[in-house]
Length: 528
Ligand code: PEP
Ligand code: MG
Image (cartoon, rainbow, N blue to C red; front, side, top):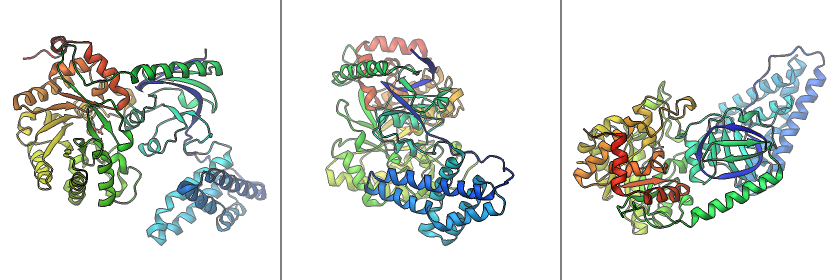
């Protein structure tokens, strides 16, 4: 047995294999005095060749990705770039600084041309990081592609990195990130075991054999090949056991709690749940530089509605940790408290109009009756405004997310405007405890067992019961099997989660009567 690292398990499952790191962009060292400019020039040429060779090798996968990689390799081989860097070495710069300067000049020239070419300036930054890494003898930045199944290790992963993962990635381990970070959510969506907030992970050497337990957060490093095989066998057996679980969500005495899926696209749909409780539409467009068209949106929504006609579609939730560059939102000092979620409508109303029209069109095309809901609703007036916009397009089932304490405290009033509530516990915890949901050191405050959060959930559920309208939980608390009986006891009518979490939540509910659920809830949040 090897050494153990401990982090937070955020997506359950076992996996094992060699670890490979997502390398950070290299840091430029302090300039060195140059005694042999010719040696620096040779180092520059060798680095650019290494970058081009690496890209050409990876371009062999073909298709659109292959074409993009080939085009990047051609830029790395551009004689003008090499000449520019060589000139800098002749002027006395060392190889890394010569590359930095030459790429900088190239970048400015592209940016000045504007339009499509200006957008390619970011590609140059990536090439520059690769060339500087090559000249310094560091691993190439970006997602590793060893060409076989591996555990991806990173300081942190952006949502775009996570979205671009290949099928070769069998588990994720990051040093940063919290249980409600979007890395965790995307990992769960894909059924990938994941451990976040795991100190020491990025010090692993590429190729070290590790096992990952995405439930306990344990990462064992330096294991043997036969231990890898044993973990894989156990993982297969566990998957088979959970796959055998089926049926609707019920307490032991038959009280229904609907088990729904959180998805980012039709690709996340899996059998075994009772519907879709949260379709995060922004996940479709995270890596886009331009506004998704009406037709693209109709196709993406129809793909889900054709399978799940009553899916709950959430309108775009942009901002903070889910940047959508195509919205062109201005930079803010305090983005989590700024123009995000439904508030984007204040400055870009056409975006919501187009999206609602696309949802209505997808509903017509598939004969579905979708539900829509808006993220980050704060007041009754906002809920009323959203409901009016959706019903004007013929969407009959309109709800809102409860993610802001102000909205939870007004749940009864808000339910006069809409037909359901869905509690986003990730943001509701962030705003209730004033704790950044991505912060690895504040996980205790973001814990869904905190009584203040449970009390707010209870308020919403009571308002729902009084109005006779459903109130679900779609944040990550809804995927916590031990918490499921408590949420049922508080009066929540549905729990929405990634498909991999459904069997364990179903088992937990089935193990308690409704009265036991209520007793558990009352012991944590005394009423009155
Ligand atoms: C939430 O905040 O709990 C939620 C479901 O929305 P997201 O995680 O996408 O912000
Ligand atoms: Mg949210």
